[in-house]
Each structure stands twice: as C-alpha cells, then as structure tokens.
Image 1 (cartoon, one colour):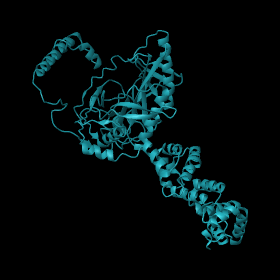
Image 2 (cartoon, one colour):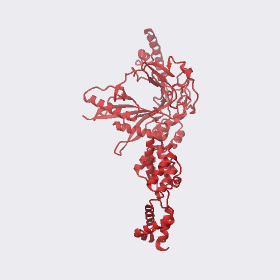
Image 3 (cartoon, rainbow over the protein chains, first blue to last red):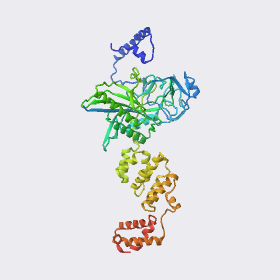
Image 4 (cartoon, rainbow over the protein chains, first blue to last red):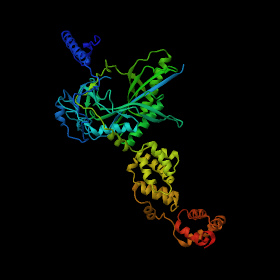
Length: 95
Length: 480
C-alpha cells in the first residue's frame, strides 16, 4: 500500500535520533524496503493461523516470589554520569 | 443550558509481593535510595525479565473479585517513552491483551442508592523510579522501578466528585479485603489519575477529555475534580474552547494547571515484549483462585445481619474494615447476645482505637475477653459503668475480665443473707410477677432476678439471686 510511507523525521524524533538529511534519505529507502517486504508477506494465506507475538510455543514462564540480592550501591553509582546522596542526577525535569 | 459532567479513573495499585515484577529485588518501602536495584530493574543491556507468578495471581484474584472476565490469553508489551524514571526507555506493560476485562465496582451513590461503576480493564505493568526534583537538577531513586503495578481503568461512569470519591473508597475497601495491596496512600501504594469532561445535556457524545494528575489523596481527587469541572463549566458557558490536555493538580494553589505538553507524548509505539512469553491460564487454575476468594464486604454485611441478628447499620459499620469484621466475627461466634458484642465494638472499641490511631489487630482486648466481658455485663455480674472500666483496663493491659473484676473487688455480692433479704423485698414489691412465675411463666423469674440485680447495683451473684428467689417462690406451676 502506498499509504504505508514512514515519516522518518517523526520516528527519529520519537527515538531521540538526530539524523542528517543523507541519513534520513537512506533510512527512508531502507524502511521502504522493509514495508515492501511486509506487503509481500501480506499476500500469504494465513487462514486458520492465530496471530502470535512469538515464534515458539512457550508460555507461562513464571518465577517464585522470592527476593534476591541486587547490586552494591557503589557498583550501581559507578554507572551514573553524576550522583549525589545515592541518587542518579539528571538535568532538572520540568513538568 | 444544563451541562453534564463525566468522570473516569485510572487507579494504579502496587501489589503486595515480596519481590519485584521481573526480578528478585525486594519491594519494601523506606529503604535508602538505590539499595533495592539490580541489573534487570536498572535496565542494563543483556538482562532478561522473568515474570513474578504471584503478581499474576494477585491481579487475576482482583479481577475475579471485581467480576472481570479473565483473558484466556494475555501478553506484555513495551510502552516506549523517554523519561529519567525509566532506565530502559520503555515500560513493560500490557496493551491489547490485558489480564482482566470488564467488571464493576458498586458504590454508595448517596441516599442509600447503589450504583455500579463499570471497569474497562485491569492490566499489570512495572512501576517506574521516583524523581526527586531539586532546584537545578533532579535525583532519581530506582527502588520503586519494577515493583508490580496493577492498573484499574474505569468506564466514564461517574458524574460527580462525590461518586469518584465513593468509587475510590469502595475499591480500596475491596483491595484491602483481598489483601493484594497495602493501599497506603502515603507510601504511594495507590495512585489515581482522573479523566473528566463536560457536555450539554442531551448531547450523547462526551465532551473534550482532560486528564488530571498529581493527586496524592482521595480528598485531593475530590477537590481537584471540583475545581477542574467548575473550570470546564465556566469555559463552555463563556464559549471558550476546552483543549484535550493533561493538567497538574497543585494542592497549594488549589488549582489545576496545564502540564508542559510533551511532544508526541502519547505515541508510545507499543509492541509485544519479545523477552516475555504469553500468559495462558488454565481454566482450572482460574477456578481454583475464584474458589479461594475471601468473603467480600457486602457478603459479610449480609451474613452478619442474618447470622447474628444485628441491625443492618451495625453490620455495615463492622464490615467496613476487614480487620474489624474479623474481630467481631470471632467475638460474636458463641456469644449469647451478639448485639452486645456489636455495641462494644462499635462504641468503646472503635472510639479508643481512633483515639490512639491504632489497628484492631494490635488491640490487647482479645475477642474471647470481649465476649466474656459482654457476658458478665449481660448477666449483670457487673454493672455497665464497671464494665466500661474493665474494658479500659483490658484495653491497656490485656488479660481476663473475670480476673480484673475479682482483683479489684468489683465483683458480685455472694452474701446469702443479704441477697435473701433483697429477694424478699423484690417479691413483696412485684407481687404480680411473683404470681406469674408461680403460675408457670418462666420469663417472670428473669424479671425478678433483674430486680435483685438492680437493687444490688449489679453486684449480687445472679446464680444466688435465682436460688433465693426460687426458694421463696416455690417451683413454677405451684408444685414446690
């Protein structure tokens, strides 16, 4: 379908990606090819096939409600760009 | 022109599990920042989530309690957005296949009327971290990130802030009955967002929806709704356009204000969570959980009224909190007069608990002790003022009511001659009742015993009083 054109600029903004004009054009073309492929798949007869989110038939994988030790604080904060009072520090979030 | 107001709620409930939704980190409140975190809930690359089966069970139990249909097939999805409280840049939630669909909550619509507020769905997701806003920056604590969070979404079935308030109270009561959450508002166990709109009477289509966030209490929901609906009514009356937006309730200002609308904030690009397999609950499992549902407030009220013969009003007060209901149930079971137990719990007990801000589960007066105290007062082994003093002592120290009475010499008089003299006096003053008894009317004896007790100010030993009266009156039917 021709209407399945991806707005690359919009998607890039949602994904916080800063794309150059060249990159936008490249992704436009690549994503277009993916959509064409999806279009081809749409031609397959799937009568009687239930939609699924997974390719393998595994379900109900649960764990028991038991606690386990996490990471030590210094190990965690070592990954923080900035920290203070055991908190990760980020630019002020204005609501 | 008359306008109609419409309200829908989204209630987030932290489930009472020991560990988080997708990892083994503990969930308890009050821990220092970032001490209950691990690579999974911090969203480190390469980690994999594993579902906490208990969170699934608690959500399904809630759905069963609220009359939802349990989805035969349910799955998790990624809700994508960027915010510092979400280290993965997506929240694992449920989009098109939630665990529970439909259902309803009955609310008190005022004037004794009951109204059913329909539910759209209940789904399960992970809570996010907590941002602590400072002057120039924000701190993030991820202890809360990954705690199982159940979201209950209603249909736009409420029309007034009072109804929204009643819904929250009724829902909280049921959640506490089921024990799926602590429902502690201060700890943020229960959080609520509101959608509301106004439209002219006669218009079928709902007006433009406005979402309000940041209410920390049920009272806050009530006042925020009052403010916001008034604002919208004023706007439509003056011809101002209402825009679809999210507004923030600011308690200090007593007003709602638009939140800076995040661009494309509502395009979450949901897609199936590839790291989690679907949940397909066997019907037998769901039925086993249904069978394990506890008695709910309304059933308890009805049973209390039927089983113990107490008034509907009493039953409602006693069943309001599960812990109080359980206490009453235990004390009333086997009591000769359950209404007296009800009176004790509703007055002395609830008053003293309220004064101390105490939970009945921490009360030193055991159900058995209360039953005994009520019995002592009923047979007038002690008078009612003494009974209240005994209750006060038990409330502070615990113990056995009969022992308290004995130790303090508040007990009954067992002096045979003194009680005999009282019996003589009562027979003389109540000749008709005495005759009634002699002619075989057993009930008349109870009245006469009561009179002896009254004259002794409740201190006469009732058994001895009975004995003395019967000696003097002869056996019923005049044969003695």
